[in-house]
Image (cartoon, rainbow, N blue to C red; front, side):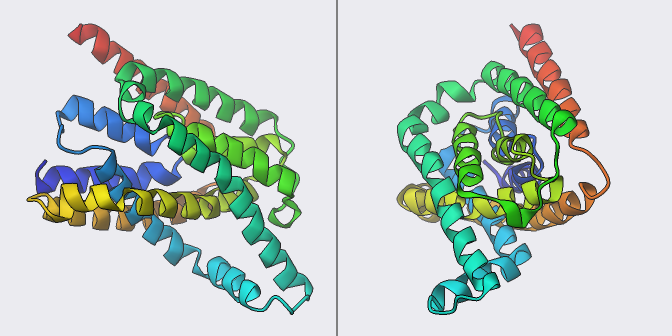
Length: 270
């Protein structure tokens, strides 16, 4: 893997982590069709850590107010109580993803990354997103999120261990089915990504160090990380603005088109 390939993968990761089109699916397809064999799941996790930087910077106000509320447990005014509640909702919603990651890690690195599987999951998850976006009531703002909502969205996030499902796509879809409005769905989805990405990064640190920091791939890891962080921040800002006036339909149609292209490419190369 050369520097240009690492930057390309970083840019892809930053864009597709937050758009509901599957970052893991796009990375798996890029590895397969571009012949990038040196980049494994550890490198992908390194790119995810780049997007974590983007989340922390963009949502710094939310994260700082949650931290302040946790550090002042005696303060019981409405805003601090709501911020503490949000923190524990995020913790609860993260647990299903952690369990899925531990149980399905090997499959996610091997059989589930095949392009045919990615094409299928892209289409199925895209259809669910389209149905949720078109038929959902979308009447509930962010401050109406309950523990039940958080757990359901967290279970949806657990499905994103399968490349092509999309972590943001699954959580946004579940939030829309729970009748949250688009802004609330996106905000909770993005905040929920922080602990799962951080946890995966910490879990994979030994492998990242062994495969990147202690080898000739060090510069590639750094370049991919920076590219993912910059791209991620730009696409967070883009989607937050986009959904104020537009629906998620275009992303579902993109998933259908990409699935068709992948399957056609596989058939032609068979």
